[in-house]
Amino acid sequence: MSTVFKILLVDDHQFVLDGLKEQLNWARFHGSLCGCVSDGVQALEFLRSCRPDAIISDIRMPHMDGIELARQIDQSPLLSGIPVILLSGYREFEYAKSAMQYHVNHYILKPVTRQKLQALEDILTQLYETREASRRKMEDMTDSNYPLEIAQALQKHDVSAIEDFFQSSLYRGCMEDKSSCDIMGSWLIALLYDYLAKIHFTPQALYISKEHTLKAWYALPNPASKANYLEELYFDILHLLLAQKSDNTSALYRYALQYIDAHYTDPDFSISAMADEMNITLSWLSTLFKQGAGKNLNSYVTEKRLEQACELLRSPQHSIGEIAHLCGYEDAGYFSSLFRRKTGMNPTEYRNCQL
Image (tube, rainbow, N blue to C red; front, side, top):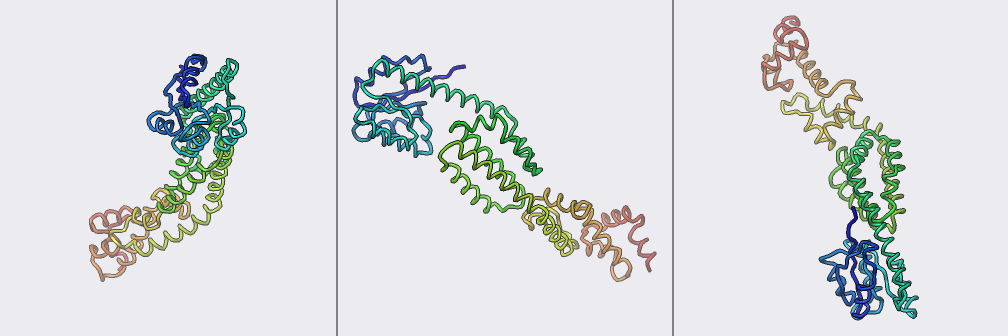
């Protein structure tokens, strides 16, 4: 379904505005006039309330000329990306070319003849078709389940799956133009930092890193450089995580063992508090501990406590209730039930066999 292509006209001569309004074939590029203003200052004021799809502007105007208008649009985070077509007199053409640094690539030389109107319509038609292609790409992004696929690939450190995505037609298509490139890029950066937030990175470090990444991303001049930046960012982080994974897992596992040895007799001990102390997620702690010990964390803590209970039961010094507390259990009944389930006899029977 076709959508309207909104045009803002900027010229300090009313006859030029009237001529463009009356002589352009608006239907050819699905055009709709959204406003007419007489200089760059008025144009910027207009842009506060309405964002056109393209701007046709004279160069020589009072208060603010077309070059300065193009510069302010290009350097504004909110307005950047709006195409500007400049109307230039022959003597101003060299001056008009200075606007190329502000991503103005379309010029129409005055006077605007029928032939030049046709050239202007060609430009507007091309801009309309580019915008529609971008809109379809964004619809493809919305319909795709790529965020879930990327999240799963990051979780598994699956470099090949990430490579496949960066070679996909969806990604390549979105990175061809500025609007869909910026949306795709901001989503991918958010997905990456969502993943990093789930592992052993502190919130403050992530915030600073993400701010730096986004600033660098938006400062890049074109979609091609942004695509290269994204791919390098993903692969650098994935390779770093893979290289550090074994060392980090080993160090964290050793720390977990030390922490358990120091705290398992405390009735308030919990593995979630332990994960918080280690500044990692509970799921990541459970995974690395299972890899290191070959058993889950709760089983390991229970075994440590019951080993301590068996040692204490070899002496008549403490009551069963005291031993339960010394092994990290507030409820002596629960301790006795657990002890029987694991050893086949209750604590009293075990003690009698040892004395």
